[in-house]
Image (cartoon, rainbow, N blue to C red):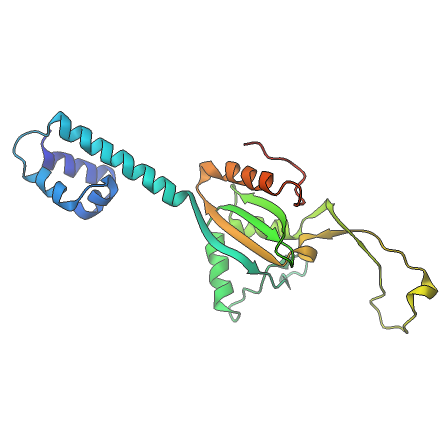
Length: 221
């Protein structure tokens, strides 16, 4: 096969508009692409082998670079009620709110991967993944989901207007109280992960924080 035929075919099949884009994709120089196109003889087996080897290395490099991308890390949560008042948002994202939050929501709505909730001291609380839906929807659902494992000792105090009475006159006892992540979480880290790696990445994180987090299931590697 002639070099110019190979270049033309590869650009069509890979939807690459320029020789420069093709060179980057194959992991070779643009000068090499030009040399192939000017070569009058067919490409030799050695040349084709070198092209395949360079393309393989470039593919591995792209896979490594794109496997895990941090979107936010230890990002502070400022819960606000959703429009319907049923759930909490992690932060306000209305059109007049902080553009940082609005743009972050858009980014999370377009990505999939894994996330970690932390308490106010930065200790991991919960690890989750978003594989079938966007990170934004999965994180918000997890933030509002009730789980039996999320319990702490608390004392029930009146919320209506009334006169104060000291605790020793009432005998209120600390009791196990079931909470949601929106009661506990103060920070969140989110990572975009390539689809085939999402399950394994979540399993790795769950195992790494196994004795600290509220996850019930030990994910399989």
